Length: 409
Image 1: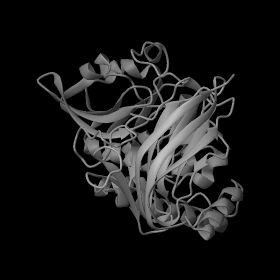
Image 2: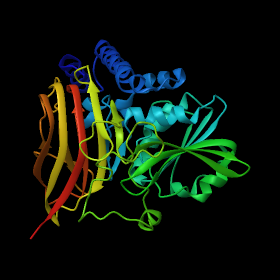
Image 3: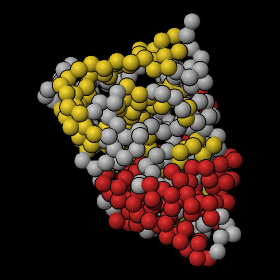
Image 4: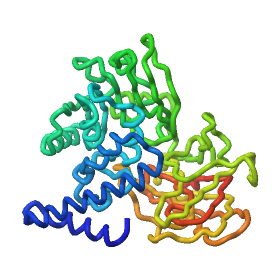
């Protein structure tokens, strides 16, 4: 998003409820422009093609589903905090999940969300009825009021345990789960109609994959899709996870990019992948490396990996990576440089502003190893590692990404 459009958005946000009609109309037009830009740059460009889904993404006012303080970021492809440890899903993820379900006008859909109501709003224009379970009570009440105010009359909300589904309105033609359990809850299997579809992120706390299921003869037939990272379900089921993270000993998983179980050219264990492809030749370590390519300043080229990091027990992270570059140049914003970045979050998932970069890797050079020790804030509880060009241009090869925690004494 260029500076002019961003300034117009901030001005629109400042206009307030009591703005004159002309100013309000101008504000609406600017938001519409930003929605269309969002769809064009972050959704269509990443492969979502269903015209009905794209139109719904263009129509739903995403800024209404974010906190006022984050409205200037509403139309970036990011997940922003909405309070109570929850986030609103990125636009691409919402569009991708929606398209995967193949929503039809007569469908009755169960949506299990974390509180914003945005996914339910996108589904509203695509299906007959949406039943949305919000797992955090204060957010669920806010989502109910917001959806009602905005006129989404075919969306019905309830605060409750998403694992239990909504049996009195079952069976459902489609089920979409926007928070991550370890495995498919049996009540959701029972409440899915024969021939129906369910999309759900499954896996360990910080290592999840989208699975698309179709119910045939009473059983789920699965298709493994792309890696992702979602907030967990709340309550007892989250506490009963069989495999729990170890925030005192975080590690990079598949840092050599060797694992690609579904052979889609994308490395396993890394999510939010943009313009990144595994190569089976030229790797300085193992049999594969990862290539990032971007020609348009500001367009994302990256992969991410999340993990638990306990800053009360870890003072630093020693990072090591092998890197090669060809004609790389910075993008429009300060952060749009080829690099490895660690973003830390506190226990409420609020980002912590720290200097956490390895790089930048600008210009042209052959394979080399780059290392740095990144300081961990004492109040950090989670982290996301981002590697790639970000919004820079050129070609960047990476391999053998490693992380070694440094304990506090």
